[in-house]
Amino acid sequence: MGSQSEAICSECGTRFTVSSGGGFLFHLLHCDKCGQDKSITFEEIGEPHLAFLKGLDGPYSVASREQDEHVRRTYQGEALSKEEYHDQVEDMVGQCSCGGQFRFGARARCPHCKSSDWEEDPESGFLHYD
Image (cartoon, rainbow, N blue to C red; front, side, top):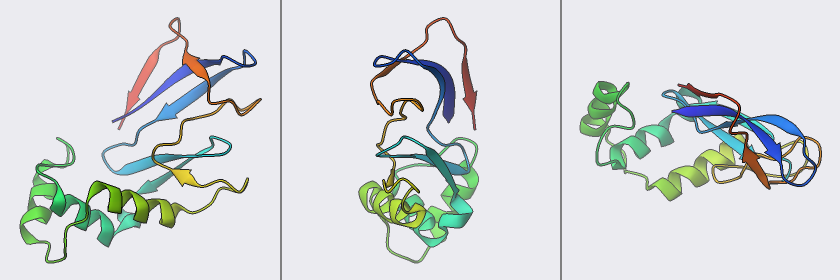
């Protein structure tokens, strides 16, 4: 499950919205250079997502439990580890227009100064999404 919150940049004081995590049907990655986010659906990922599901000990999410269990039982291909899966998805998502790479582990950045040093604003709300 993903989330969205307000953040304050520790470098320049800019307030901005941060989205993190994916949902039940997609992943959200951030550029490792500028922090822009980009989503990719499991349907777009295709075969590598099925191989990833096969390698899990349980379902990917509660919402997709039945479908995930079906894939784990019936998928004929080799399972992918989390690391192999992340590498393949990052390659699919490709490069950002700034020249950076969209990565699972990249942190959102301030849209003004591009710093990754920010804190969530404790006064703002927190939104969960799927």
